[in-house]
Image (cartoon, rainbow, N blue to C red; front, side, top):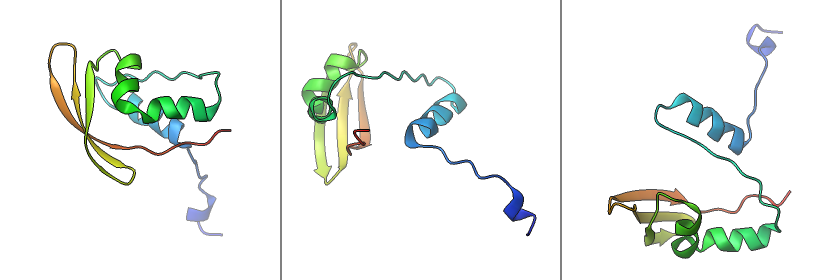
Length: 97
């Protein structure tokens, strides 16, 4: 067995990777919540970004989908003070475990 084969392998699920990334970046905060509702109901709310996101994200007054190519979105987000940002996002459903 080679020396390389003896190293343990750590695998992180997407949420654990997000936590690790957020912990390593300055000025980044992350909040995770479990919503006690069926996945299809929650997903339909999230998928309707232009109406849903401003309801649960306090730093977003309005969000517009500028373009869509499959699951890839170009967004424009407007904060409470009028600050605008261009964002790229991937909108893909998770699993309903």
